[in-house]
Image (cartoon, rainbow over all chains, first blue to last red; front, top):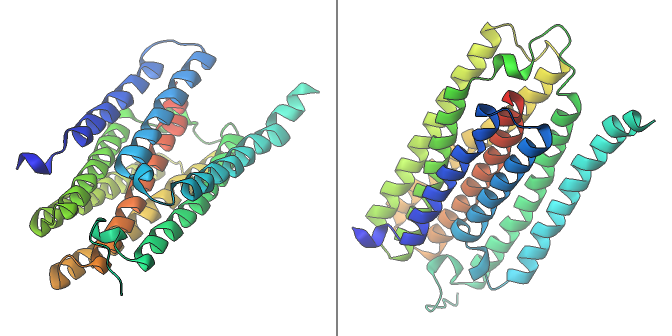
Length: 96
Length: 198
């Protein structure tokens, strides 16, 4: 029974629950917008990495380089889409 | 077909390895798809017209239930893959079954949440904010719904055929999909709900 619950998985699960609880501080306390977004950004990225490297076994794939390049490229396109849109649709106007 | 016994079943043939790599390429496209929906949401989130804003309709309890249920399902499917690698078919099927059950629970809470919004007068047609919100949440929910059908079919195949290189490969790829949906949810939780209630 014990071998069915490997320690890294259990630690990963508990950490992701804890990180979700940490994210709650942004609504429980009166933080500045920048501070709140920083906390949310950090907790979300750590959780995403937990999933990616622990549960999705990115590291063990023998095509690891191709795989990480692919994810990196997708993230690049995604972030450019999000921040490019915000730049063109929101921030650009406010700067004038 | 050449089977390499030094590797886990799901990687054991050339075809299996390529299928896993191919699925990662698909997940790359999914990252971009959800990015466009996030971009739309961030752009339109303040355009609430005469409707309610995020801080009025978002409620912490259902969101926390959804988050905990989905995180747990991601954990159980991880355990399922671990059990599969141990060759323990029964444990693997149990963990996959629990995962799908939790996925169903998540969908149930999300549908209730949508009902509540509509009941409060927050429909998809009310404002640009709500159109973007329902599109983002709905696309994620549709992925979970599809995952339930897909996962159910894989579970039936494993039951019938046992753990073979094919069924192990399918199960592993399904686990990648499920973990990916959890990652998307983490970003929805943080940058839609938590940010909206901040």
